[in-house]
Amino acid sequence: MDKLWAPWRVKYITAVSDKPRGCIFCKMLASTKDRKNLIFTRSRHSFAVLNLFPYNNGHSLILPNRHVSDVSRLRPDELADLWSLMVKTKELLSRVLSPKGYNIGMNIGRVAGAGVPGHVHIHIVPRWRGDVNFMPLTADTKVISQSLFVLYDLLKREQGHKKYRSLRETESS
Image 1 (spheres, rainbow, N blue to C red):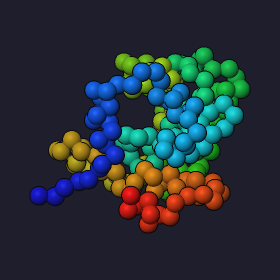
Image 2 (cartoon, one colour; image 1 turned 60 degrees about the vertical axis):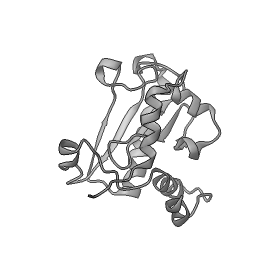
Image 3 (cartoon, rainbow, N blue to C red; image 1 turned 180 degrees about the horizontal axis):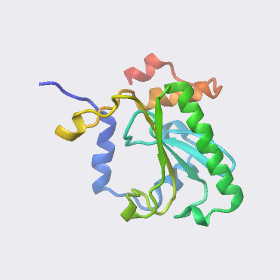
Image 4 (cartoon, helix red, strand yellow; image 1 turned 120 degrees about the horizontal axis):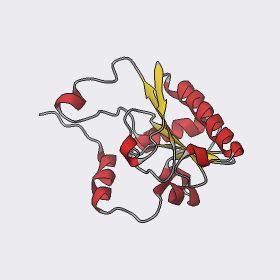
């Protein structure tokens, strides 16, 4: 029998029963541990983070720093910054991953599928031909081909940051 290893998913499984208090995104933003929280870019009013439970390799979230539940509540400067960071993140993902397309969108409100409905965010999901196969349909399993921390390091390096762990070191941890 073949096994698919996705050890980072255990955080999701255990988090379902141990739901933390407060907004997870606000806690991430307040932390100085960007690598631990997978925040790879901060701008004046927004930040970009790798989705801890991605639909596809490179699945990123763009969030305003301010905790608001709808884009209509953002000030014009916040909205412009959020959109600008979304475009910059898409360009960064294109340079690092070379996807053939993207799904970009927002789920506003729990009934629309928002997992964290209180803090609005934009999803950027890179897409490749053949990235959707039989696994989600027959085995309720999605195969993500790259470690989140390896991708984090690649994104930071592409942005010109000199501090990152070697890829070999990251893969072995």
